Length: 510
Image (cartoon, rainbow, N blue to C red; front, side, top):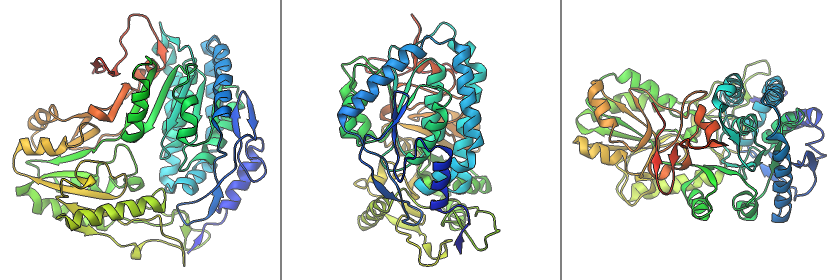
């Protein structure tokens, strides 16, 4: 096994320097604000999760420089917000063309930086470009009667979807008349975002990219009075701290947080279909906000469930996303590669071991022995699939999202028990019910604390016109998706803003 020629990190980074020398200065990255690439910030190195290769890390800023960046973004915002919509649209569409031209390079960066498979990495780039194209085609009607916010939008997002979530949101925010600021995720994705921002900035779209720790930059990116809206994607701990800091400010906010997304199985018989969904659920190692890490199963169906579930999990293919047997071979078709880092693997292994020691029953514990790896490769960031039956209430697996390839299975005897088990995390983004009788499924779905509920199919964040949000503690502030994403970053007199807010909750029209 070898790394496919031309996809080695040195080759990929050299291509970045050739395409955007202004952003990839020497052996370090630069931050971007006020229309210029800048050397402020301490250069860092990190390691790729796929095999431990040393790669270029984020140039970490201090608070004072982050404040300068925000003020520069406000100045850009004041000009951009008065630009004609036709001009904004022209520039954004031109930027999409440049992103599409460099699709392969952006995808390779996602593979090296955050361990996506080749298929998943390409999809992340495509969803960004195709999604923003939809907004560009429909923006006139969506924006009717609405105006940009008084200040730029600050974006703080997790590392797992730099293009289809973060860059997608920034381009829609710019299309709506706002300058957009992004904090590069600390755990990975900064090279991909740097290249994307370089391509977008060349078209005169007012974007800003800064790197640094959350504690150092929060005063500028979260609490600053210059910010018109804060958009956050991440965990409940960080999201809760941000929500607390904004509660008295009245500042527009979008806080997407995790929840334990569950798949309930009740009076069901189409096991081949469920097996396909089980395998598909492991995309990107379940490092997704809409992954399904819990199955709540009617006890009388448990034997049938296992007969479908276990073969699907055993067929999963894990390995190095760029490893091939021969130079001419295509990149492998894997279900997933590494997790974001070896620290996450250790955390999950410790959680699993603790759950078993407290009474959880191991249904499946996979091995990396059959994985697709290079000879002698560092596999510290890889974790084979694990499934635990009835994790104890004291375990995080009982009530929290593991954010990795670890499933829990809970057995129930009544509908009430099933609903309680599926609502264990005080709100989630998605849920699904496997049930032969659709009226029964819809009746049960009405009591699930999930924003979207699928009947015999999974739900996802969605693209284009599809709305997205969360119930309970999985979401704070404005909902997004479709016209709601534009509404979240614009103003209109006497029109409701749909979402979860301290004093009220409004759900979008169906």
